Image (cartoon, rainbow, N blue to C red):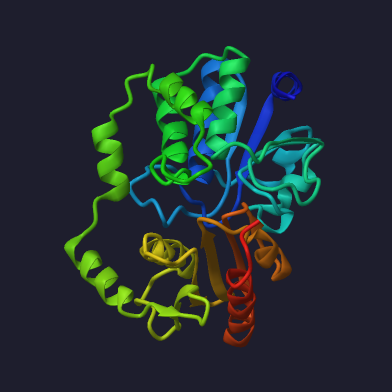
Length: 312
């Protein structure tokens, strides 16, 4: 599959790179990483990155390209870190002559002419890194830094059980470039003191179902002014990760488009619950957006029932 992907990239002069909306470190890292890989190895190609602003990672200095529809004519569109077509940041990928996808989510649907999908990878960045290594592509510090950012964030700093020996082999490969790890980790994880206080307040909002599913529910009125519900939801769910005796946890944050829902587990496959409510992701880390609080509570009931069963 990697050779077929490289053949497609070589074939097209204009390449437009997409990923899922509300990008996290993996979506953004794989998008920027592939951009640099293509430009470093094929400098004469036109390469564009499209999508919404990366509000979760404000320290990343990137400007997304605003391009007209006609740019897709005769072009290759590449989709990264996206398991569902409805989550792709710009639906104009359908206008491209050919499409290519690199993804590590559980396969739900065929999206591109060539789908390179492998859910055994901890991140889309890991998959793109293996593509670069297998195809012996030139690896710049900029490409390596972007790809490493996605690997470290989607693996939870290499503690999630999606982390394997291959993860560390690929991380070592990226670290053959002079990545400034001190600066990268500081940018990713340093918090303002005010945010630390807010997190302490949010921890007091944690509740539990009868079978010990931990959850936080944040209404629109409780959402800080000017905040985007998606990154808030992704941030809050991690507060419940290390509670003793809790094996499933979920965060609900009301936004303009519905209730953003992040599901996590360290024992159970929670992905079918996310899929039932229109989302997807991985066995132990998935997400969806439900229309209202009533639906969110039904989802919570499903997680509670799952928690009462034996892990599969």
